Image 1 (cartoon, rainbow, N blue to C red):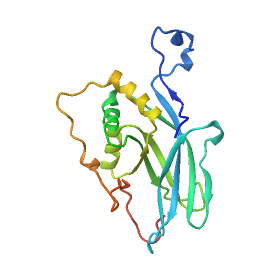
Image 2 (image 1 turned 90 degrees about the horizontal axis):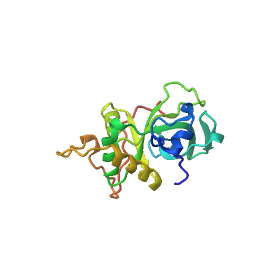
Image 3 (image 1 turned 180 degrees about the vertical axis):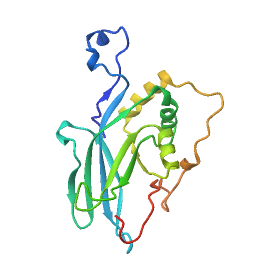
Image 4 (image 1 turned 180 degrees about the horizontal axis):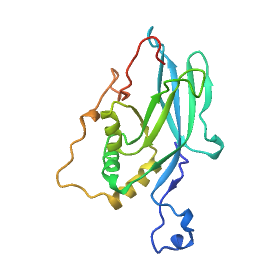
Length: 205
C-alpha cells in the first residue's frame, strides 16, 4: 500500500516554518487514513457471519465523512470508514519503538459492534480509533476491546522511525512486552487474528 500523506512539524527557524501561518502549523506528526471492515460468511450455525479488519488505506477527500458500503453479496460485506487521524506523540515514543521492533510493524484498530443499527439496517462493526502505538494497543487489549492489526507500509515505518530516532531514549533495562502480545499462530503457522470480541448466541452480528 502506498500514497499515505505524512505530515510533520517544520523545524523551528527553518524556511518552511517561517512561511507557514500559525493556524496552519502542524503541531505533531500525523497522517489521515480510512478503515475498511469486512463481514464474511463462516460455517457456524450460531454465528454465521464474522466481522474483521480488512485494510487501512490513505484517506481521500472524495470518501466524505460517513461510512460507505463498498460491496455486499451472499458471502461478504465491506464498509469504508473514512477520516481517522493517526498522530505520533512524543510521550509515547516507546510505543512506536516497540511497534517497529516487532516482526511485523503495523497499524492497530479498535472496533466495536453497534448495539443498535445506526448506519445500516443491521448492526455493523465500527472502528473507533487507529494507532501505531504498541502501548495503546496493549491497553485496549487489557480492557477487553476488539483489537486487530494490518501491516504498515514502508513509508509509514520510515516516517515513524525518524520520529523514534528523534524522541525515544532507550532504557537500560529492556521493557518486558505485555502478555497480551505473546505470539499467536493458527494451524498453518501464520500469525493469528488478535481479537477479544466475545461470541454471543444466534442474535449476534
